Length: 393
Ligand code: FEO
Image (cartoon, rainbow, N blue to C red; front, side):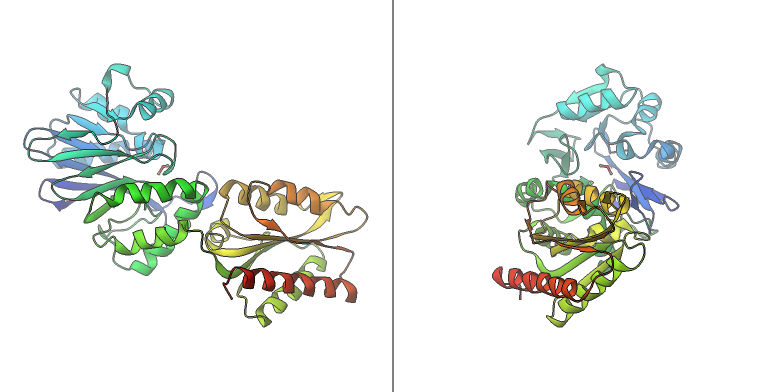
């Protein structure tokens, strides 16, 4: 729905209440929204971002309801189709409109959408665009999600239109954040999937937008932050090198051997006052697993062997962790096997991008026995020593 943010500034929020997965990967327990923003200046009108193509009719209907007869500029902060996908239809209905974006985004939009090359206006980092009594300033913020991403700052009203940056997958009837704790959880899940692989770049971009002295952050997913301090502080924490005294155990067990190992190490860690988050990969919401890896100092992957390889669910989890590339400092691998004890090396190789110290693995033939349990206790002790060495205990 369209709502006024400030005089002549409107949010057009397409709530996708029923969407279950994003990128066909991460579950969306709260759906999501695709937000665009309309700014009516005294001379020109701009639309910031659009919506997923499934919501083109919705966006056009809201523009009609707002009696928008002319759009001069469509600002594309990001080429991904959940924000750009409705641009071709809007260009058809508003023939004077041009797409304003950087060169890299223009090239990606030409690859992804059916837009003529002469419908673009290219802007550079720091460039401003006057709408009359309002001014848009463009700041290049690459890798808040893709390499072409930028943010748009409305100078007079101090609103930062951040697109994916600070977003949350959260469909809502509320324009602004109502409950910070709820949105923090949704934004963290969002960060884990979308932003965490680019943590170092986000550190640079946080510094870059600091200079803008924004009062409001209006992302293109989830509610608007009228008190943005909490989400910016959370981002600073998530992207920092600091990790928390937590162990994430991602495991799968077929006949109980790996489960017995997991139970034992979890108990040992808890006795050492190290909180454990356990995720059974046979039924896990991988969004929660990703979320837990934003902070945790240590990841333990535990799996049985299927024929000669790690269980496929453990391989999938390892590949996912490798893609998300969390700041995890230590990795442990545990497993059991019947006749081929090669799973540890194979599993480790799937997580090679994560620059964590790999702890001595524990591999057990069959069900864990007394000596095996001693080795698992030693792994727990090693995790304790490592956490102490980085002063998080
Ligand atoms: Fe919400 Fe990267 O798109």
